[in-house]
Length: 231
Image 1: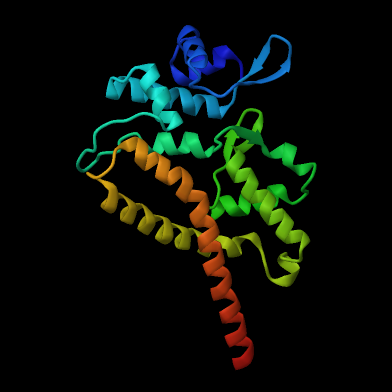
Image 2 (image 1 turned 90 degrees about the horizontal axis):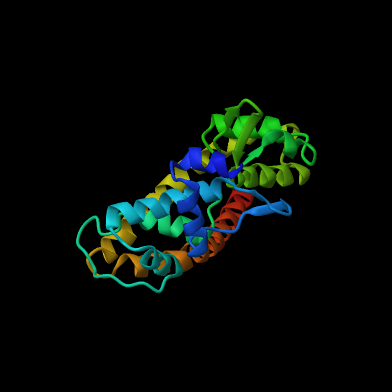
């Protein structure tokens, strides 16, 4: 999207947006040609997060930059101590909300539309219909691509593995993530500030994915062994 589109999406004028760029608060845009900048959903999300931090907390842009860099400091608070934690962590771990077209995925994965629509039906991903066609976030596109690789390995309808079979992951993810969020907040609220909490989560989220993956692998192999012996 162009600068005028970015202004419309965020409600922030271009002069303020340029200040955000100069302060290092926004990622650099893609530049397909000289003097041409292409902005994405990551810029929309970052601008809205900065504006929210600035307006609701009364922090200066320098203080916000310190928060995002993990070098700021503030006093620990009580309950609801982390009103901006979601925005801080999402920006740091690179959660991508920039939209890409489903049509572009069909070039490499002819089953992308079938899989995307099936995954959307069971709530794994979100599809948005636009005048230009169906779009999804980069994160959701990654999920569709992963299932495409599973197809290539033999996990397809012929072998009894339609994409709908992944529905059980939604419930499992909600249970695990819900418990993780509850335990984390119960233990840190009132003890550490928002910056330290963001620092901890920036490290913990990818690390615990690896940890959980190994636990799941052990449990899977155990169950495979039990079932084959019983069978």
